[in-house]
Length: 313
Image (cartoon, rainbow, N blue to C red; front, side, top):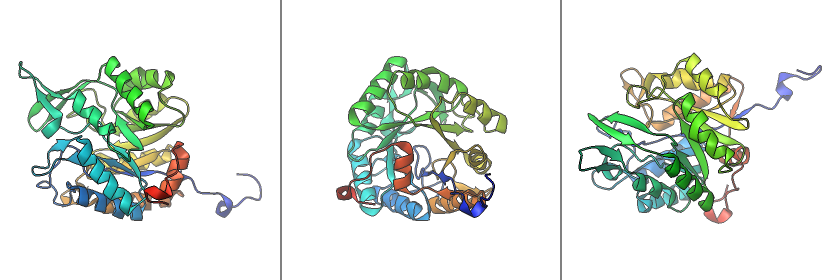
């Protein structure tokens, strides 16, 4: 610190808090606070923005059975309702989930998370960012094995479509190899501009083949492989969420919380999205930082300012 400069004169670092309110796996039977309708999802997002979140990582559920979908009409309703209620950065999923419209069964009996359904997550109005899992893995979920195939050619197709639509990728990675392979290749090919928003998802190793558990060493291995010009976000599932997001802040990164990743506040105690955001905000401030507003988040990530006609800021 320069001579004569006090701590009070140093601007606190702005931390982006992402809320992932729903995901594509859990059901309200496991936590009744899980929002699954467009109205409930948008209400939860607005409350989380009020608490300090600035990006919403949105999964859609189809009406009736609330199984996973990337139906652009469902996303359109969620996005529209959300925009009416708050100025959050809208990030739609192209992963979808492990049930419903996302699953295709082949003649061999093999189950896949369907590629064409995943692409539909980009087609709704209002999308500013979208998750991009540019790797192939097998998911064990709901007692079934499912292949989530994203070949290099499919990576190119999704990256080109995001570029065409003006959508910024959220590079969702679960191991160092996910960073150094197609993620870096696509970045080097010009499919994204700095800063690159890279979300290190930790703790899915029991269900996602090739994923890493959260440990300090594992996270450091991933950070070492980040392309220059990256902004790090860290997500972690279940009990790993709290130590992982605290570690992310110590590394100068950003954090994601929400019922997509963690249904409990602590062991045996169900939680809500707002409580998880509030806890993240307390940790951010205890470490001398401040939550970024949605407008500050757009500035940090190089996104277009929100039009006043689209809800204003």
